[in-house]
Image (cartoon, rainbow, N blue to C red; front, top):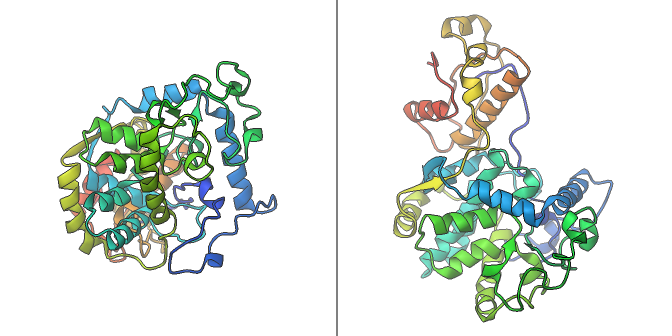
Length: 389
């Protein structure tokens, strides 16, 4: 493909990963991972701080209820698990200095390391593979501070172990609400984590999503997904006055999962195509069929109607306008990744009334080798149609 507009790729900022000093069991030494110290002069760390302060200012009981109302209808989009996983190729995490590979690579790295250490727990392998699926919200209108980062309950006093501490909530309305700012707030002692209203995140969304779609994953797998980012509990030791016996029993599984999630990243990319048959069997076993997603945030429909003709032109015109700079496919990026980068640029061009010419080019660098017929369907899903070949 070729385009006159060159924009940055869609990015996912997971600020919590820059602030965790836990040891690693990866093939790299501990000191080779991130420096977790706070440095206002460091643009990445400052971005992390801003993300968390924005989160802690805006995440209230009312906001969480609004997000649950928005996302838990599950009536806007349907997808197989595999297609949803492939969409994770579109996530480029600019906050992660340990890897610049697509999110799906991290998913397979996590799953395969779990498989290596727990060969008989196939549900655990699948849990590792799908644990980040909730991040798709970031592509559909949800701000990053409402998708990534450590989680915590709303409706009670902020714990000291939350990243940046209670001071980061100084502009949060719930901080000054007597109904919410006490030790127990709206909860009863030892009511259990299942009865807490958690901050909205990709963890909570995926957990609710699996319940809605009647996943056959065991309860401990669902707990791993829902609470692996709940650091104030499983790492900080807070909120034990709200947990019950079941929570304490399941804690060991959450901690076991966390080490695979955080510290399996490396430059060794799994052979994803070779691994798919095994994981497709697990998907069929535990979460078969087509899932109901809520993908209503951003639509290409406005662009694909009256603005589409300003973006896509007949191939005859392309032959006159093509430049030497073609939109090449990047190595170690899937067709989906390259496609979303292209469509993101196309959307930017529409927004700025810029003419864009489109052609197809070499697919050889895309590791998943998506065929043209499937690619056309993917383009149509973005609202792009017309004389494309």
